[in-house]
Length: 279
Image (cartoon, rainbow, N blue to C red):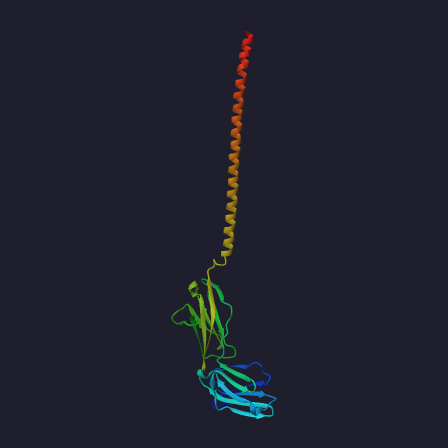
């Protein structure tokens, strides 16, 4: 990177051939205003003079680009400056022969990186959310809570619950203390550059200490219910057996009484007979 018209010069190129079946794209990140030189090269076995060359920014037709050719190779170059966020975007070169070939340069500010998985922590604990920007140094960092459409800035000076710091310029850390379940949700870190800002979200999940115990408690409840059912069945069986034994005992007593009665009745005629014989 060298100085060019008081701006740093960014030079990038794309090569295409008549056999290119898909567009070729190149992603470029810019932190600061820059002078830009974009070059596209197209190689063909046909007549280079019959190839139509155009440039576009998005759908907007561009002018003042340069075209040159050597044997079987067509070159085109577009020079411009990017000094604000509106000039970021996609710049494309088109080579139209029998088919159209396209090369695209995508300009944007550096992306913020964070952990893809949600952070899970517990009520009452503290947590640190981290965002980084690799190979870049934002002018400043800010943190917001909420979703993509509605974001509320976190004021660390008015709320002691939050603390923001970073060990390096390309990193920011948000510390949230004395967590409650109301603190769960999305937290957005914004990195500000001269040409715009980049943002990313970190998902925070806050749970009670009882949550991990729920499966265990569920198992305990199931065991207690199972034991209670078994005890109830055993008690019911024992009561039924006791009633059966009482019934049998009652029948046996009645049978004995009946036998005794029959014995007395049988003995009475015998006594009368004996008395008659003695007379």
